[in-house]
Length: 171
Ligand code: S3P
Image (tube, rainbow, N blue to C red; front, top):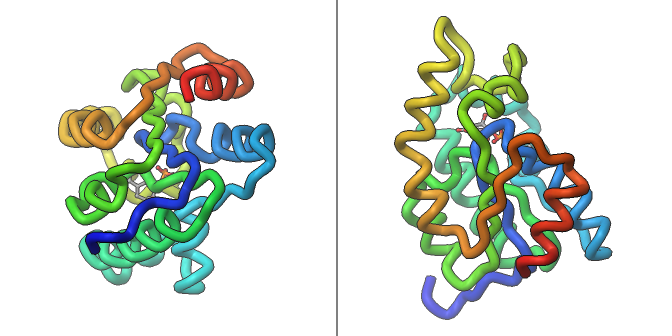
């Protein structure tokens, strides 16, 4: 709602495999603040795993929970907040991000797929053709990540330490 402004010092966005959790941890340590990971927040709050929420309740139900957890994290947490890769799909979330420092961790499709590997912790990338799914997801989300970002950092072929230094240099 109008009047609420983001407290989070830095919000990390990007697709699965872009390094949000790893970079988030390092960045928070570097800044001497806490990291809040919204995927972990959803699991803590519901007492359920994300794959289970997708399987039992479906993606729209997951997105509603996510929207709520993300909103509170961005408005109330004054450290680093890393968002689940699909949170930018919500217009309400994109609105909540206005006025925040939002870092978009850019990653190529090839590298993103390599990093997500064959883990089934990511329900959206399971199935017969993860590469096609990832490409399709990026086609839809790339403009949304760009819309919310105030800073963009390319992460391909760069170590987490290097990415963190690049972020700090751009703040
Ligand atoms: C999702 C990404 C996941 C998690 C859920 C949905 C997505 O987070 O929120 O599986 O839609 O891209 P990561 O980006 O941390 O993998």
